[in-house]
Image (cartoon, rainbow, N blue to C red):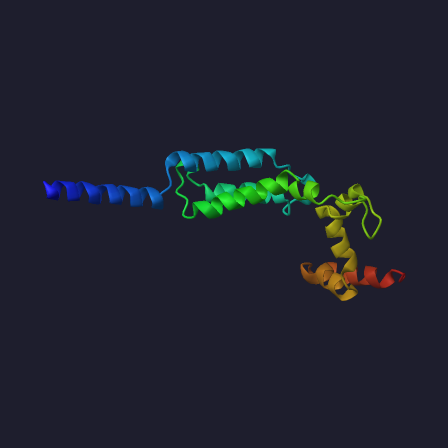
Length: 162
């Protein structure tokens, strides 16, 4: 009789250990649904193609929860902490906790002006403007044939310098 009791105690300990190591499906499903809801609510800024936090967040959630609600999470505490951090950012927790006396910056630009400056298109234009003359010439002639290179050289030499 003691053998049966001992066997059932081992079985219970094993089940408890497994439950601790592998989170319950309902908790994993709950985590997955919370992240999905956060992704749905998080805005996507179309002016920041390839650099938008909302898009990046969606990609990371898709990677982390490849199997959807059935995904096994190795570190549930870290997962919950990540969700809470993202939720605080999304809800502007810190903006409300630490309000600014004025909505200004050292440059005096407005939020709309910053958004325009930080758009992917504008940053690409700035990169082009900041390239040196030598880099521009290298790019201009790198992929062209000899005849096209000659015309491009003649055209660039005939332009007046500003």
